[in-house]
Length: 287
Image 1 (cartoon, helix red, strand yellow):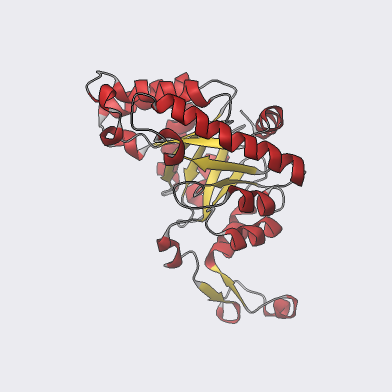
Image 2 (cartoon, helix red, strand yellow):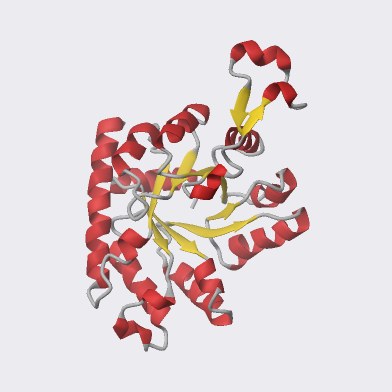
């Protein structure tokens, strides 16, 4: 699925919800813990229950990798089960030297057939370039994340007058410093296009999200942190939506663990529907 197809799905459904499949084997409902294919059965029922209310699924590969070979098999069965009408994301956060990244890109785009993969940008362009070379695939780059540790590096100030990459003649046009995440976003955006690049921006960083939207008015943002992490869908929508919607708001635990009982799928459906109803309202108000 490419960008235009994703936009069509968003407007067709009136939803920009991405359901995160962070399937933890220790959190399966009791009746599935003894099931020989419990994780896949859980994923299958979640997908069946939520597919009418979302446009995307994000599979957090860590939860499957931790299961060994069996986990990779479940991951493959899961991504194959997701309808072709939905945008599939491998939340793998890869990024390495060029030849290694090329193998990661092949793994997720060719072997498993995902539409998108999340990558870390801090090894530079050669670590991201192999992903960008795939036609009709999307590379989702970590921009400003919602975890507390984002303060350690992402929010470091770069003093431009001491930066060899900064042209001092431009000082009159703006402040003499910028955050590292700003440099990352602007630089990475120049490596690709709105068709093959998205950025991760945490929902708990609403003020920065508004600033980033002004920096990158046309790109899609994958926004985690709504729901269990406390982000506000209304606030995110207010500052993040653009003419193409431009947002995929991810909800993981709030949806898939809405109930720990045998009614987990029904509960997930109810919460996903609540999100989609609010999203439709936000689209009508903002666009």
